[in-house]
Length: 83
Image 1 (cartoon, rainbow, N blue to C red):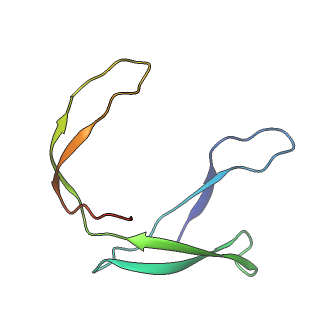
Image 2 (cartoon, rainbow, N blue to C red):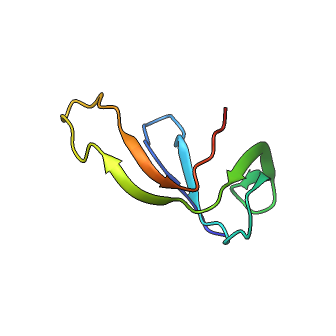
Image 3 (tube, helix red, strand yellow):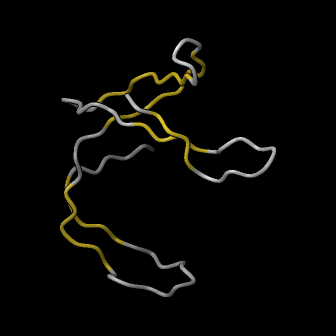
C-alpha cells in the first residue's frame, strides 16, 4: 500500500493529512489502521469505516454562491448514518 503525505506543509510544522490506497473490500466493515513512516515502527489506533459504494442519482441545487453556505441535498442509494 502506498502512502504519501498531502495537505499543508508549513515550515517547522508537520503535514496535517496522509493519503493511501486501500484494497477493494467485499462488505461494510470497521478496521484498525496503523501508520508507519519507515515500514517498521507503527503508531496509532485509528478506525476506518468501509462503506458500500454510493450511487448518486441527483444533487440539488446544482450550483450556489461562491461564498458557500448552500444546503445541498443528495438523492441516491448506499447512504448510512454515523449518528
